[in-house]
Image (cartoon, rainbow, N blue to C red):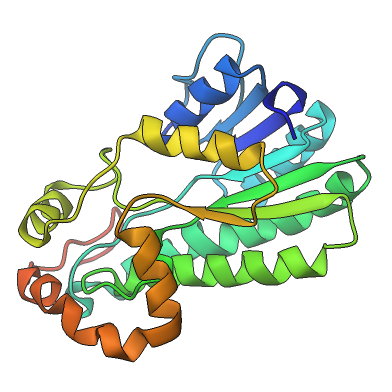
Length: 262
């Protein structure tokens, strides 16, 4: 679909990648409806806005209703929650929150939107995944699991909807230079020689994916190669991540807001 034909429902619109995606889409001629928890939209002038928490039943219903009334024909799932560190240092509450935001919420929103999307001449659902969803990277076991599940869901759904007007695609960025990745991730990336892309780079790749017939697109080298090789020779690559394993630093558990520390 050409961007000028797109009416894009964009979750995570107030995040670093989301703001850049909204700007790129608007510049290319697309209409954008942003979704986020923030009270005010930081998006370009003329962008519609829905304030909602997609991890709640009411939030999902509000967004699905707004998207239907607005006649959205593209859904970009860019909302998500971070998780970095050794599994031993990750609280159960954090695991639940990350899986809820990164996997279950986009699955449920997609399910709610499908009846409307299938009535259109053509529609697209684009999931913002991660290279960590295809490469088992030390320090990202929980986050990677959530994105691996999202990749698997998208792949199965793409095949399930192959005879419908709805196209399903996945974008797999590598580490991105936004507030989503904290100082610990940046230190880990420096120690392991991991490159970080700008959110504008990710937005440009997503725009190209929207206008292409590709099922998925991964960003950056050697990540694109690693995704392919890991799919074929995963266990043989285990030794290649020794530097990443050694670069993990144990940190005390940080309770989530409202969570009682133990």
